Image 1 (cartoon, rainbow, N blue to C red):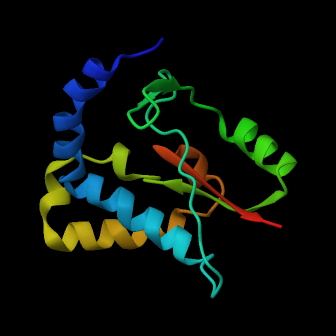
Image 2: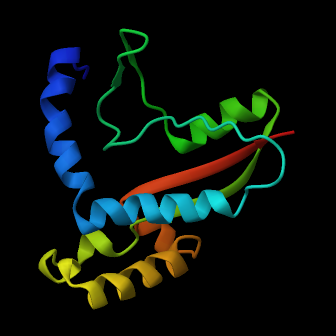
Length: 140
């Protein structure tokens, strides 16, 4: 299923609202923490591919065309053919989606949830339960 630029623009406000929620902020906190594990002194270039629920393509406004989403296995396989190796894989929001939303607005609860998510992000089997999956590769 594909979406048009207009359809994509219609959901931007909803996405921005989601990003402002505690669980939306937590997504970025955990993702940044995972990337920080791999940062070194050399220059860093990040390719962010995919996202969402994996059932739709992603309309990329810079290219004015639909970019298909790939599974993590497909993307890792492709990147390996380009001289990259997998450096890490993480679950992002491993338990957050299974918990009620109201307590997440409380600072103490959120702090404990953040710590739990940071601890579980690379732990099997919890990373397989996550709402999002993050793969980090390095150019060899």
